[in-house]
Image 1 (tube, rainbow over the protein chains, first blue to last red):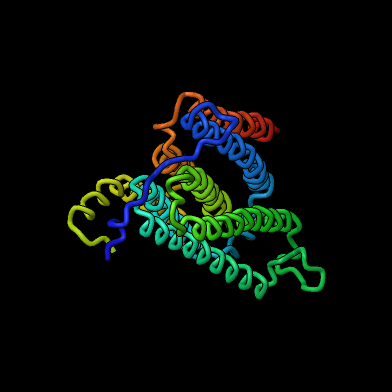
Image 2 (cartoon, rainbow over the protein chains, first blue to last red; image 1 turned 120 degrees about the vertical axis):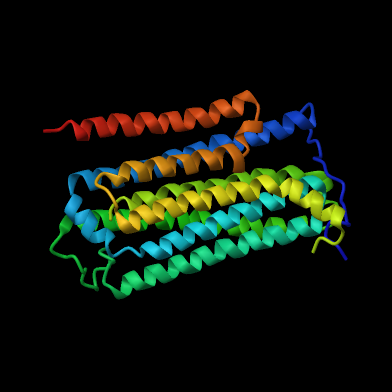
Length: 220
Length: 99
């Protein structure tokens, strides 16, 4: 049985405070963009701080960055690019009304997001083993003779854990939406939810595309 | 998963652009990883930042489909990055011009 054969009706149910479906869809996209831009400014402040630390304390930051797991960061970037591809697949199939295929792409997206978090968790564990968590009072910090490196390492944890929190939130929303989307009639009433969520998912990818060079690559 | 050849053709027609976008992003990531791992020239960070900027533009333009959005959304997206540009420029001008 093919996934595409079970075409569903595609559409958006008009809610009372909009005049037309088109107006409703555009308002949803604009609202999501407004929120994403506040998120962009939040992360931009963190990345800017990382660059300033690099300028002020180049040796200390390079020494700290040598402990980052460059190759895990690179693999994680590949994983997120893959998840963006599957999310785009879900959006495309939602437009076609291919509900079953769309649900599979959504599940694949959630699985890749989870893989990212698992790899990140392993990275944190390796950092713990290497005594690279300066905020732990009961565990001596590896680079204790380099106070500025603490600033960079702490910033690394703030930026990556904040990104991880966004990803975790995204996976949770995606799984709930996948459950909703697997029910009959979803695409006939709420197709644009897939598109709006897709914007969020791609944005998480975009933030990591900036985080990887800022934290891992530039400081080598 | 997609049984008939018509379905596969339809799928490829719709997936062609996302696949090419992901391919382009992977190539650019490969360039940045290669530069970061080998550090071939001094000031390689300039190239790395440029590649990252092109990757971000690719995600905005193709994955997030900004090019298909109405002018107001394009303006929003543009202004957001413009603000980030002001933030980075003014702050870095300060730090870089200190004696």
